Image 1 (cartoon, helix red, strand yellow):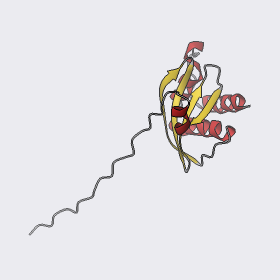
Image 2 (cartoon, helix red, strand yellow):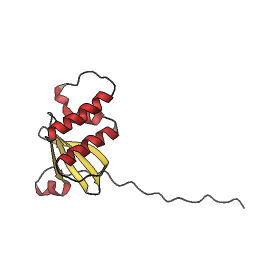
Image 3 (spheres, one colour):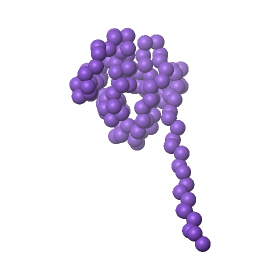
Image 4 (cartoon, helix red, strand yellow):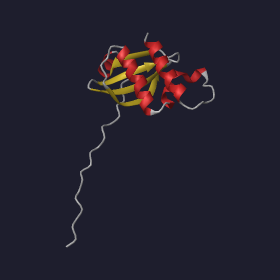
Length: 128
């Protein structure tokens, strides 16, 4: 079920993208997902989370990093629930775990994107 949803989301995004050369099977779905425009990538990952019964109203960031066997790992930050590790197989299958559970299960840790630094605005000086 989850695989079908991910396949449908990626297929819809790829159909709306410009035509490209055939992707070798070794690159897998994660590489295709990485090449999607950010909005489409976020939508596909959000649907994977929803199909795993995780609450994710809005994907704030998604970063691909590392792998576990033949699974590519993505760290996805959601509003309001936090961060998840999403493992995507070369066949489009996906497994979702909260970042807190990854440490307990001795899986690769999430590598969250640092929060943006806030910069203080300084008023321009008035000439005297």
